[in-house]
Amino acid sequence: MKFKKLAALASSVILATSIFAGCGGSSSSTSTSSSSDSSKKKVVIGFAQVGAESGWRTAETNSIKEIPKLDPNVDLKFSDGQQKQENQIKAIRSFIAQKVSVIALDPVVETGWDTVLKEAKDAKIPVVIVDRGVKVSDESLYTCFLGSDMEEEGKRAAKLIIDHFGKDAKLNIAELQGTVGSSAMVGRQKGFNETIKDCPNYKIIKSQTGDFTRAKGKEVMEAFLKSDGDKINVLWSHNDDMGVGAIQAIEEYGKKPGKDIFIVSVDGIKDMFQMMADGKSNGIVECNPLLGPQLLETAKAVVAGQKVEKNIKSKESVFTQDQAKKELPNRKY
Ligand code: GYE
Image 1 (cartoon, rainbow, N blue to C red):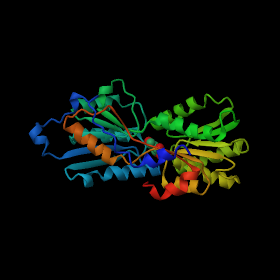
Image 2: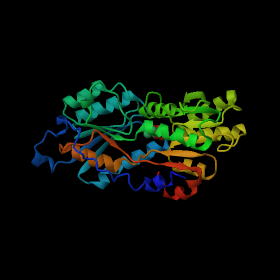
Image 3: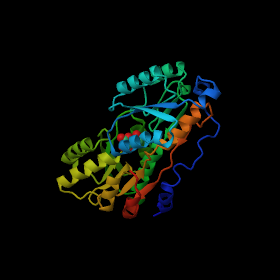
């Protein structure tokens, strides 16, 4: 109930925050052309996408692909990394060779980017990290990060469980992890685990990756149920798609998702809202994939040599089962 206000705010305030606050920024973020030229020159964004593993990802891709329609002075080169870092590194090198104005990287995993980001820096091409974060030895290798606070999402997921059961309940939790080594997986796990530290009888009895896909989420949940089907009372899924797959597995096993097993997940895709409206899930932590407009503004500012905030966070909300039916028609992804 107390999330109702937040929920109402959710979609309206996403773009409301001012992103240009004058901290961060880097000298390498100016374009090589003179300022009078750069106002006429087309801005070319090279976007290195993770893949197409989830409904969230599809929504993000669609939003990014809208960019040239929002601003005819901006072109987009899009590359699908198919969940492989090596493909994304190749894409970045190709963007450098093509001398794009700005590179946007949505990194499949957090580490291993130093070399290629240094190449971009040496070529004086600014890099905006989108959605998932990177861990690099030198923060000046990228201009700014635009995306969600994954740790906060993990905390919010844990709070949904605590709000429902109370801190002293005895719970056996099954965890479906996202892609191992991705900031989304690392951050969500950390935030969740830190929050349930206060709950002495919450136990994570199962934990495995489902790689953020529906098919793997189902497969892993089947294995969880096979070994511990009668013990699990909570499913914590790092994204909705794995959760939707797991719901199928739970039904096939003969249990009632949302009743016999309390389910929380992250993203907020329509399919999971539908599940929640049908009583098959219990809580969703929203993660906003509609990053196109914010990336457009950020990329233009960076190319124009304006200073931007180092961390540009998207605004998000949390939804409980009682809000699902009302919220479903408002979902944009
Ligand atoms: O939660 C998941 C997707 O990086 C925030 O990646 C994103 C995550 C999202 O596959 O569905």
